[in-house]
Amino acid sequence: VMVAFVVFLVCGSNHVHVTDGFVPRHILSSQKSRTYVSSSTTSAVGRAGLLNNLQENTLKKTMAPRTTRCQGWVQGADGEWEWEDDDPSSAPQSMTTTTDTITATATPQLPSGKLKPKQSLGQNYLKDPNTVAKIVRAFHEDATARGERQGKPLESIVELGPGAGALTDRLVEMYGTQVLQCIELDPRSVEILNERYPALLVHHADVLQVNYPAMAEVEGQPLVVIGNLPYYITSQILFALADASHYGAVDCATVTMQWEVAQRMVAPNSCKDYGILSVVFQTYAEVRCHFKIPPTVFYPQPKVDSALVGLHFLGPTKLRQRLAGVRPRDFRNVVTTAFRQRRKTIRNSLKKLQGVGSKEELLEKLDSMPVPLPETVLDAQKAGDAFALAQTLPDDWASKRPEQLTPAQFVEVTRLMFGDTTTTTTRNSANTDLEDMSKTTATMMDSHIDSNDLGRKVWRKLKHGI
Image (cartoon, rainbow, N blue to C red):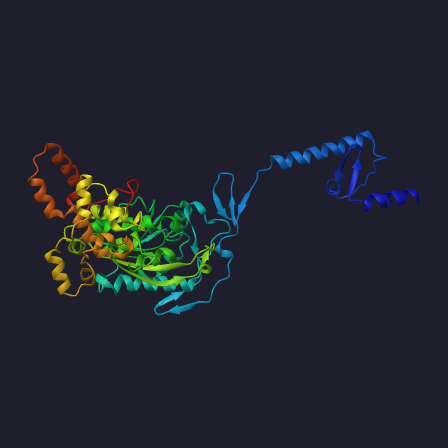
């Protein structure tokens, strides 16, 4: 009876005591045959064995590699963050529907664990077939029925960042592999696409480093771009396409991006969303926000809404007409300097403008009246061009904030600060100072690369592309 009572007490207690310390019950009961030991009856050999087991378990826990988790992302031993859940193949397939002539089918089924999204690449795969169908439909309209693309055949499609291939599958079905090429940085995606479509040209490259004019030259015609862009490099990709439009290398682009970025691109002046992206792309292209995209159609789900945006770039000829002699590099200098301090007036924000001349010359220009509009702009106004109609600069332009000026008025501010190509040539011909002439020559060489007066690398960063 006493033995049974002692066993009952030991089994019912929270811990089994061993001499000076205690061993948790789950350590003692780790074996299939559980043995409960009383401190009063445990031998020295038994106590030593229990302590050795405890030390071994503690050592194993200490030596085991730690896995860091944060909101669904898991950091591996190499420091790379991957999505913890399985691939999109685990998601239920949506019903097949039809959007006009474009059929929505299930997203590609990938081998389990083969293509987990990486945070370092900003990967959010499209998984909803209906959204994919809507994107491809909007792309087809942009590339065949809008702007200067009306009636043109689709013979040079470039997809940026195909990832798991949700868009790629639909594009191959509609247009074939002969007119489509992809640019992908992730070698896992390159391998999957090469296995799925051996005839498809997949460039293993960074979209920020691609020479788009060279690609267009190889194709013999401008490129038509589509892509689900990573959020963290969206602006830089768009700036690269803007520079490529100096050469007529890109006709149009239909791309996904963060909703807030899309709102900035289409925002009118005198609102909080209006900024650098608004001025640049409303000058360089016709911008259209197609529709809003909820987070639920992506894998993994982002924490913000997205949008599909279509851009029809003007091309070098129409861009020259719109700028009317203003150099894009000077235009960039004025716009970025002004919006760096967007709450100040134009006069105060442009006091830090570089490249105009002495401080006295800069202040004199900031207090001057607007220069007359060029004849080409006046002709465009008579023809009813919306951009030109908003180009007249008010007399009190310097007292306004950057967000109050239209993109066309920023062109005129640039002309007032730097002049245009005609006035620059006249001024340089009258300048006999050797040092000034050498500086002018260097500037001209920089902005006339490849005999292109618009410049080769104006908006994209110096480290991106060539």
